[in-house]
Figure 1 (spheres, rainbow, N blue to C red):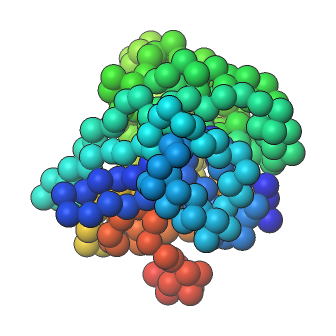
Figure 2: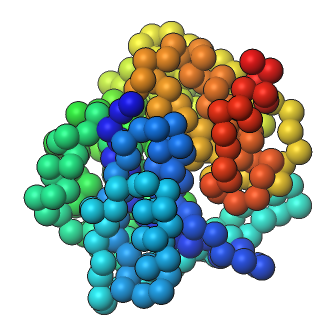
Length: 293
């Protein structure tokens, strides 16, 4: 079991017909907790009914909520989700909301110091308050896992480069890989060459690239590991990459070998994509059956 801190947005995904709890760091936290890790969420909610429901949900799922701040002047975050015919999602993100205004305090610092790893994304840097809190906490983190989550216009190249250089582990999808490698100066069209290019440019030895239905590639201490994906019927892709990361982080922190870790993480991501919403319940027997173990 590992101690994992997830920093960033917690919110409600608002679909045309219903609402679901979400936010990339929260999705990662929930999946990591499902594998019996000790998981703490650092974020902020409004003092409103949506915030209270979020807090209850996290406590019910045994996520440590002591570092979730309740703010009077900002509302709990909401994101409007639009799904195309293939189940792929696009988003409209309200601003400002509570998770934009996470304030640094000693409790956050001590929590990060005591953790094995800290997971964070790029969306949280759209507001200076949460951005500066993140920057401060990174100075205390023992192992920094950066999940790029590029949602224009909520990021800058300068911030992405800074966070990649700080990170011990970078996760991004294939579209993000090519965007980032291009502005870092790569001339290559090869996925593998661009992974190595980012690793060298940012001095990061561990990088994972997800490829949707085609699986993922993991660079881990100089070696490449591959999974080519699994055939499924996609319901919606919301949260699939987050569950992939929560699973991969759990596996690697708990000393599972990288090939087994990426295979297992891709299976969980596929199971999420063939279910509705970001956080369907997925048991170990379900994963084992999917992998025919």
